[in-house]
Length: 91
Image (cartoon, rainbow, N blue to C red):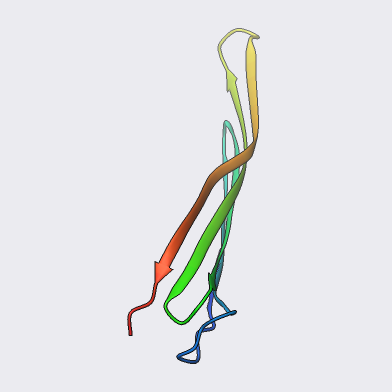
């Protein structure tokens, strides 16, 4: 699932959230489950400069089974991706 919204409608972008996005995926396999999500936004400080940031959250559960009765299960919950940037608008 992906969601992307662009709200830039004027030449003066200052004080606006110009982009907002959400992306997620769900994978179910025989040996486990993976769920990831990414949320980000872009905020305009002035007509020519903006900042952007994103954060990703993930959940992974994997199971390994052998021919014996030994089983291994691993679970991870935490941040998968983070980022911050500067956007320069050129008109």
